[in-house]
Length: 415
Image (cartoon, rainbow, N blue to C red; front, side, top):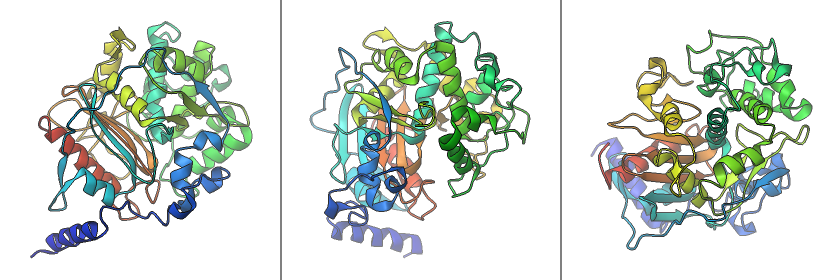
């Protein structure tokens, strides 16, 4: 028997012996009832991750956006679909996955019905879960709606056209389309180490405000539009542009133009930077997993919800279709920060390889919404990974989650 087969067998035996218990329950604070942290620093410590990620807006200041008067129904199918997937020479089920990885929730929706769902660590569908960088896609939807309504004239405009305080700065001189594609060309490393450019940016943002933080980025590593370089600071600029262009804060604009029209059933929140009361555009959104599923359904239906075209179909395609991205930003070609070419990137959304259009909203520590428009299929995944990057700890969280998604797709179609 090969080493890989032995590892798979050992993993299966361990999972069976644990009776499908969630991983690291004690480390994550089960005995204390999965408490939330008392502050943002404590929130990201292991014993507080579960509680904090489902109550972040009780730890930090936030603004709120109301649900729809008529939410889109999200009934549960009976019976549910049995999900199988292959990983590391083994065949697994959704229950196995919940025992392998630190997922707090997985919800699969097909044709508007919940066909499978699981929760770990005492989490429930009523809890608002932190999006982390999935929020970036929500900001992009806000920008595209502002374009549709004439608040933004063109994505070829520059950020300084809407935020005069950015005039002459690197980000101010960058076109909105290149901010959406993470293609500003700014020299910026975001690898979730303690002193990377993201950490420095966030510290400045919290001390001096969002505007001062984005003004501080001043060096280009490449001409804009040529190269993908993931940096949340670019989404912070888009947040400033959106507020300036619409004359509304993020909660009001997203709430009125996206959240309520798409049929959200519960209140959502945006975390605020206490220094300037700006919404944390790059990762401060909080919503229930069912409403993340409704967001995924909106995208799967090319912008339609409740029979209404909430976002123009052409804008959703510009955002998510690999064929509409420049060649350097398509899956199989685009280099990410680790030198991999698996994903492509659209407008603040990750584009997946395969036989037809699929894409994902992704956030650190395991947050994701996967969308397959052809199959009208959505998978919501929330988590509390051991590290922000996902796989640095050796748990291969992102890899197995991808295998699970492929198994979900295989239940209804082919990759």
